[in-house]
Amino acid sequence: GGAGVAWQLSGPRTVGATLRSAARLPEPFTLPGTVPPVLAPERVDAAGDHYRIVQRRAVREILPGYRTEIWGYNGQFPGPTIRATRGRPAIVVHRNELEVPTVTHLHGGHTPAESDGYPTDYLLPVGDAAAMIHDDPQAVVVRGEREYRYPGDQPAATLWYHDHRMDFTGPAVWRGLAGFHLVDDDVDRGLGLPDGERDLPLLLCDRAFDADGQLVYPAADPMGMHGAAVSDDYMQGVQGDVLLVNGVPWPRFPVAAARYRLRWLNASNARVYRLRLDGPHRQAPGFIQIGSDGGLLDRPRHLDAIDIAPGERFDTIVDLTGYRPGDSVTIVNELGDGRTFDVLRLCVDRTESDSSRIPDRLAELERLDPATAVRRRDLHFRMGDMPSMPGHDGGADMKGWLIDGRAFDPSRPDLTARLGEVEIWRLTTNFNHPIHLHLNPFQVLTRNGRAPSATDGGWKDTIHLPASQEAEIAVRFTGYTGRFMLHCHNLEHEDRGMMANVAVTH
Ligand code: C2O
Ligand code: CU
Ligand code: CU
Image (tube, rainbow, N blue to C red; front, top):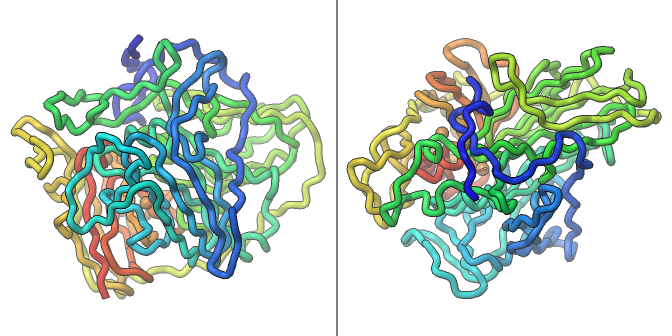
């Protein structure tokens, strides 16, 4: 059975239509919440911590009573969490036992180009497969297993890894190829923030399920390479009516009346959330933001709501110390117009001592000085006609998402930047685009010509630009030369052209 399209789950803050599931869905807040297991290194030596991940199909019970086929790192969805330490390389060997090529990217990682998961640096399946491969003479293509080296020379931060295959990132992530990669350091550990069971990485994504409980994705061949038409829903970005937190629909987390560190990751293909706490109003805790994409903020910031777009992370504390057993706090997504969509519930079921603190100063943050910028660039993100590209039979009626009027082409460097130089980029849009940059995070200087918004603080690697907004960001590339990506993190936009090459040189 197919899934219909439900407009009622879309609001002013969503970008398009929502696929409606045909399967029987659980009542919200009935299933227990989980966090993805931490992956133990296979080996630890002078070179670093060595991990091994097998990408394979698996069957999971996501909806009660249904067996859903997923593509998972180690067969899990989300994938296992890697916990890395600043300055210690994490060396991850991926083995591809799927039937399609893959590319693995560490989002937010300060990673040399050869391990960054360039979209055509394919890892072909172990066995034979009818693989859709984009011909790119510069690409390094391997079969079976590939080693990715993450030096870890970056401050503590909530990173994530996910598939990044050219033209097929949307369907691959939708089927499950995403997981956390957390970097720890002495600064973070020394602050006394909630940790252990009170440090919860939360991967948010929306999905839709057919009558057999299988994941629905509206285009098997999203590029229309075989003449298939692409629907408007696909073009805008694929959204579902089931909200999964760490792979569980609308979970409930039993918690103590204590402070919790909630690390939010929006791993959705296209859905943007405005997260808000809805409690018994004994006290309105709000979120205390302590970190952004690139790591800790300089000081904590109180936020009533968090706008989080695909690719973004918000590291927050929610303080439940004033609560009593029996109280609960619900986190909802505000669609706009006063309507909300459930996310998860924290159910206080015990009192426990809590020695954690939230210091007034968190970390030293270097400010990139706009006065030192050597270059200014304007970059426009908009829809347009897709020119025919090698390997794609384009055609005049083929629409795509473009950066400065161009669809992604691996053979064309779009921007050249030099190591160590500060640049200012002005980003403009006519639609919703979460814009993401690889290699180094950036700082938001202005939004719509004014001061950045409350959620733009710290080092960002993804910035959400709602329709017709603009922002200026300061960037500086460090460490590694080579080709890196700038792209929209709406995965359907990314798959339909909205990526550019940044050539970083000496
Ligand atoms: Cu999260 Cu280039 O990706
Ligand atoms: Cu990335
Ligand atoms: Cu976009």
